[in-house]
Image (spheres, rainbow, N blue to C red):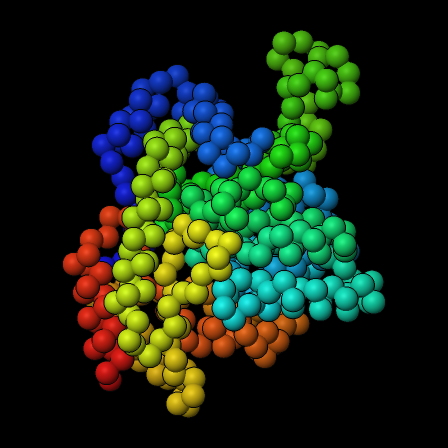
Length: 389
Ligand SMILES: *Cc1c(COP(=O)(O)O)cnc(C)c1O
């Protein structure tokens, strides 16, 4: 089976982890700040907080922004459920904004229309989570302008997008957002096994997220309510969690970061090659906005079978045929509002037509840094066979 994504672990990665295993600290040691500095400096961001997953990073980002009961978080339906769940963790309500049919990212025009209506109803969001699907940045300048006009905060869910660029600058620099979140799950561009990071230029948000990562406990004298009782002393000043990353993971992350640029270059080559090889097939290859340089975490094709009727069946047949031919295709994502849990929150199929149309034809083809051209040719041949059915 050719998987849709796969990590690349080198001897240098393994050595870096073994060094930590033989050192004094397995967690809460020197590797965490080194990893944070490495990613922050790569992105050109002031602060970074490493955590045990992007889901945790989204949660503490929402909390640090003050999201709570009575507030609203908005995001796109075409994302992993975590981009929406973080709002519910905080006791806030979640709502969705339909996608742009070209980029499949949250559509700024749909966002504006929804904001106009929400202002009338007194239901403006406190936080909007912009997800850079496949590694292609959202229209951040437009979202940022709306954030200023309507007074909401912006989190970039860049779980797919480390190594990508927007308007010539690294995704993660938070020029148009309050916080950016990365995931280091093995299917993503670089990995720490499990892991995530929240980046921000705001020192207060960074401090708050660092506190929430570790039980809300501080050893900083300036933050304590009174003089320490003794050298053992710490204070819990907020309700936090154990969302810490280990030093083993951070060491792996630092080692992976040395290859991030090469990874994105290789993924870009593979994407361009797919664009050429698939040009004559009845499908859409991923359209790219000129402002974006994608990290190419995913390569999503859309089948042009809607007009023929029975779209769902044809899509499923093509997908199944690819799997039977040993191609580990996937589908990113099932629209979140159609999940049973979200249906119980009051959402219905039909609420976000562009997202649902996308879902009816999308397939994620294999793309990963160690993929060779022969494997890619196998995928393309399998797709020819599948579409001939
Ligand atoms: C993978 C992913 C997450 C969750 O990442 P974890 O590190 O597994 O918690 C969140 N959002 C998006 C868009 C993702 O792809």
